[in-house]
Image (cartoon, rainbow, N blue to C red; front, side, top):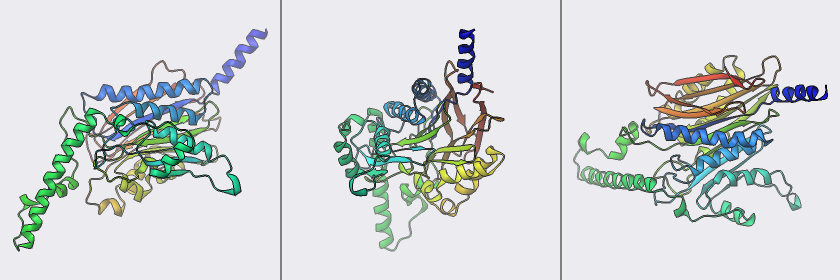
Length: 399
């Protein structure tokens, strides 16, 4: 009888296992020829995260491992293969947050293969008191982050080791386009000073580029956005994180939403429910609208989670004054998860929405043989494309 008792106990433990990993590789334009590579990047990140979660790892472990996997994959705009700054270097942002409210983040860092791992170090050290009642940091940038990493023997790499030939080719292309635009702008200014009114054809290319997103060749990605992950461990604890190389041709020192808690990543509790969100898109507009925190608030407050996500995208972001009045093209993609720990429901809601051409995601539970990947394509850009599904935590099976 004892083996049978052990079998039932093991079964009960399995049914109570909440473990699941959700990953996205950014909202933007993912070319059809490159779609399998984007799907596999997300799937690989899920596999790594689940391997840790299945063996008793924390939700934070899962998020860190997934983000590191995405950063090591050159097809993503994070870590190795990131977009290059104006001067041709890589600068990255990353953050990790737990449902306790604790977080760790780094911004505008250039000497690390995995900025998410450095963000995890900041998060872990924030739990430890410092001498003389000093407050440990939760967000470090630039040279300060580099000094912190040296102090804690965190491994550094040469910035050139983060640059791929494809990223450098994009930078060369954009550099030439920018040089041409600047020449046209100087010529326009010269004509204006001479008292001649410029024709519409003489308007700077930079101005035109801000009105609408560029049309991409079928085989070329528009790699501009943040990658993200949300994990739930076997005990129902939740963590989320983001990582990004930022927008191409950015100024050195620019910090994007991947490093900003409440903008790119946010988690909140309400009773037995926990909601987490990780976002990508036009970073400066995301920062002005605090889109991650507003999305979480909407999902918590509304009975219909899908409608809450839609309202956040259409009202809090696209409907905001800062976005409406912006000369830049506006884009946002949001992946959100709601965990209901009420035993009568026992469900995990997986939600996503984006205004971009596409958004690629994956999720996996311990019982799944392979991750399920999603390439959501928006045929009505810039209207909102919404999706989602429910996962039973007790059975760990997708409905």
